[in-house]
Image (tube, rainbow, N blue to C red; front, side):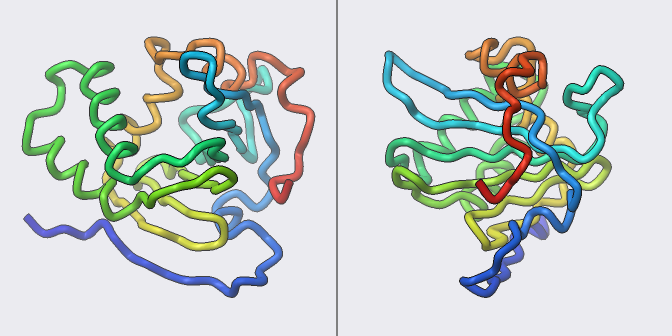
Length: 184
């Protein structure tokens, strides 16, 4: 099977604007919160979107960015394994082993080892797929809409492991959306 998912591009180290903002130049933060596991802060997540839904929350049919700032080190392998496990938990047998193997390959190209303070950003592009960024660098473009939907469901599906974080990301807790500057 032809593997078209990984394109690596580099940007100037001193770039001022967030590279992912080329897809969402007028993005505003809709919501955000912290993911904790057994009391430990794992990461802080924020959702950015140009045009929220009529209630001011996330429109999941329009482009958005999920920005994650890590509070601890996580290996690429663990990130990929956890993502596949969550997709399987949320979607059961909907995706066969070959599809999951392909998606694992996508993620192995797109993700990197992270340490505390590192940031990964996933940009959902409806009808197209998604892109993944680290700080100012495009890590991968994945032209697979079913992968993009399954991946972002880890945070946005009602059956997510942390529904409180989901509600905050969706913009249902407006007190979490204090900042509107993605350079923060």
